[in-house]
Structure formats: structure tokens, C-alpha cells
Length: 404
Image 1: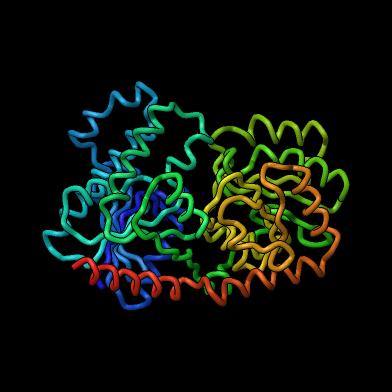
Image 2: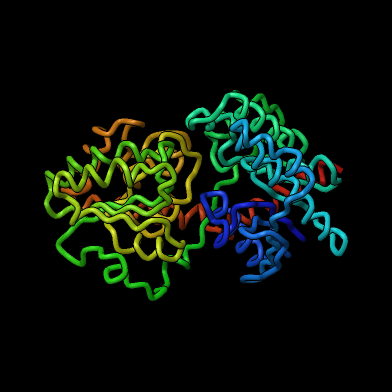
């Protein structure tokens, strides 16, 4: 198949979150299977740029069109998400339309979040597949956003959802949420996220101890790697760090991720320094994927205190590295982590529950090793990148044939 993937988020330039990570793994896996893959992604500078990696063609675009000028006033009214969706959708359409002058695609895949395919499904006659990650209607109320911005953003995303050929979700949880809360009545197929285990098995030459100052022995390190925002549970970690580090003098906490809302700078670090715990507290800022993988292979416990998740790559990466995981019980997390089988599960938005589960992990090395090994086996048996890409393309072929 010749497959187009529309995703504003795409590493390294615009690899902001899980959608970009998914698109990167999916594109590479499809290419491994022999498919022709062309990714249309965002650019941090104006213009259109072409590149290639591992058999995947990549076109990056930033286009300030007449539509951008028309919607500029939306920013003045704090309709930031809405304007972003419209700009992203039009840029993806423009780049894909140009590509269609030279080639044809069997299907175009895109996330619902970002509305990357909204204009494409409206103006182009091409089979399309939408993947549900984090629909605005389900998550925007967590953020400090205007109601009008939430409604317009959800409407723009809904256009692509209604008009596409195939609908998939990486968890049963989100498939059910979309059906009940977004009134999507057409079939939603659960196709999990996949990950490339080989990346976690090779030595990428990154010495995390010298580069990041992580302890080398006689210590237990708890690692958080995600955006430092409330939806990811960052507001809970201050109490976790304080209680756990006070009780266990050999425990370190490490954090990686963009501090978009200054939780780390203004709340957590000053509190840690006030109590004299800063020597065992490490904040690295936003890291590249290879750096996160290298750290994961050297830490002991991975922490996921999110308030809302579908099937996050932060969890899949920790599972692939064979880490012991302490996770929230929110959303699609129980589909990845089963309490006591391949990780420990804490109560959503409850710092004390997380503290109790962290203490269990810290005090029991055998438990950490058993759960980490089981997490890795979970990925090996059902979540490898090539197996998931094959599942997706087989579904696409069936649905395209049925639609004809």
C-alpha cells in the first residue's frame, strides 16, 4: 500500500507528545513491512521541506495562508486551540494536495487530536483512517480554556471524525468514551499502539550517569518522563517526592519533560530546596527520545500519575525497557498495566495512594524485577510495532474494500 500519514507532531522537530511518537513508530513499522509511507508533518519554520529516514518520506510544512490571516482574530479572543486546529488542517491539506499531483495514496491516516485531516476529508476524495488519541471533547475541560474554544475545537475535530472511512482507537476505554460522550455511532476498531523493541535492546552510547548526574549504585531512582502539566499528574509529585525521600535516604527522583506551566520552576523545585532534598532530585528538561530510552534502562521505577490517559507511549517505553511501573488507574491504563501482574496501580488523583505503591516497590527488589520482566513480556507478546502495523493495514484493506 501507498500510505500517507498526516501528523503535525513528528520527531524530532515537532515531537511534542504521544501523537508524534505514535506516528513515528507507525511510519517506520509500515516501511519495514514494505509499504510506501509519506508523512506530512509540521515545521518550526515557514515553508515546505522534504526529507527521509529509514525508508519513510517526510514533508514538513508551515504555511501562513489566507485562512490563517482570516482566523488571526481568534487568538485575540483566546481561541488558541481552535485556530491551531484550523491552521494545521489546512496546511496538511495543502501539502497532501501537492503530493497528489505526482502520486496516489491508498489511504491517508491521521489523529483526531489536531484535526490534521479535517480539510482533507472535506475537500479530497481519498480513503481515510482516523486514530483516536485524546479528543478535545474529552480532555479540554482539564485545561484553562474558554468554553467557546472547547466547543469550536471539538466541532472542527468532529468534521474529520464524521467524514473518514475507518475509525480506530488504541484502547477500548477511548473507543467507549467516543461512542457514549461524542455520539459516534459508526464502528470504532481497537488497534493498540505499537513500539520497536530493538531500540531498547541496543546500546546508543549515552552515559546517563555522567550526562545527567544520575546515581551509579546503592540508590533507587524513580523516573517521570512526560509533559509537566496537570493532566499528567505533575501537581501530585511534590508530596510524593517529599514523603518518599524523607523516609528513604537512598531514593532519587528524576524528571524529564517540558515545564509548560511552570509547575517545576515555581512550585516543585523551590519546595524541594526548602526541605534540603535537592541533591537527590533531578530535572532534565525536555529530552530526545534516545535520551529517554537510555535513562529508562538505568532507573528502577517509572511513575505515571496521569489524570487522563488513553494508551501513552511513556508507559509503553517503560514496559519495553523492563521497568517496574507505578501507574494511575485512569482511562486506558488498566489495559496496559494490571495491578500486581506487570506493574502496580494507584488511585487516580490520590498522592497518598501513589506513595503507598511506591513504598511497596522501593522495599521489594524482587517485586520490581518480577513486574518489570512481566511488563516487557506484555509488549513482546502483543504490542510490537510491526505486529500492530500489520493489524492496521489488514483492517484498512478490509474497510476500503467494503466502502467501494
